[in-house]
Image 1 (cartoon, rainbow, N blue to C red):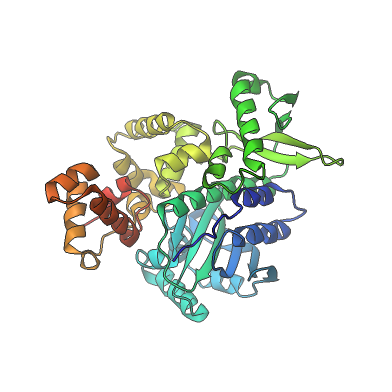
Image 2: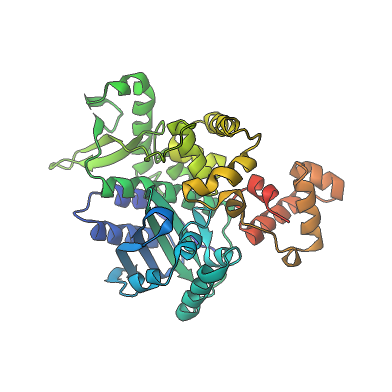
Length: 402
């Protein structure tokens, strides 16, 4: 089924996320209402904010909102559901790997108490599937947005791309909401002119920051905001440090705040702050392009950060790095990010052949030539493999086993 509504106002969702709210509950209500407007067929959408201690202990709901077309009810059963989760269940359910997934995909790669709770929850709702977005504003804090669906959800690549970017903004906007004291680095006009500068470090990136603010303003214009690519012009973070936050004065005049909003770096003696940020997202299954978007870094900078992090711990590949350090970042590691083991019985003979060739590092064109098939056929088979394994990317798919 098609998950996103046609011509959905994705920019409107970002505007709602960054609009100030007096408390977390009211921010959650508005955020969920905006998310619901994206969906073609929303069934009982919900948003929960959960805090937990070290090692996933003591989960506590900070906000829990449920609604249909309108957000209208607090969820009384949310705290009870959390109490049923032990530490492993908490980790399995709330740190599945990808930041965008489906209930069916999650169930395929969760075991034990987490799987039992997910299945019981889905059975109680009576829906075959649903979509789920995760954000991790700071260590020990999770935001999860979900919606049930009347059919099994197959996330198209374009839908996944849009939702990954929404999840990135959910992360940064929630961090601003729970830390309203975040320092303003600069104030800019809609055209990208600096009105006020409070952080001297802005000077070194002045042109890039000004250009990005002007780009955000263009994306918000009515004639552009419903285009699929509009969200690509509003990065969740610029240079891994600043969020662009729109505001209006009492006369309705628009301006933009450039706010310090870098994620808190988990301690690791060998990694730089940038390497920590990149590895944390990679360990949760975010693709290289998704990391580049979320942190405002170039693809080459993302690749370099992963390579350097791997070298610092004596590893030679991204896959090995994520397998070793992924759990340090509250993620499932490389196997979890890739979707875990493959149920080969669920694959067709052709898909098994394609997976084997893909693991050898072959391109779609090379696989098509080896199997005497068209490139379109191979592309469709790779897309089916991504769906069946829950792998967030081709690289992650190549790492899954057996």
